[in-house]
Image (cartoon, rainbow, N blue to C red):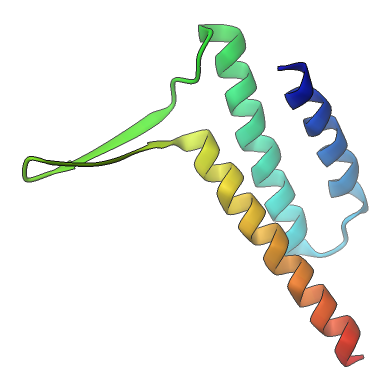
Length: 91
């Protein structure tokens, strides 16, 4: 759990230095998801924010909301880095 807090502090420093909006948004999503998981662990002793989807008797996947934010954040951050790289190569 202390590793999660160290990672969050590291990401906060990165988000301050990142100038591209998509990358900043991605890092913010990662921080939000990580904080959600850490706070759940402190308060409940486990992660509790799940979405379970069911349709016509079929059970779909079970999603952890905080982890979804982390994954979306990573995708946005990588997308932002590709855009920055392409702009720099084209300039």
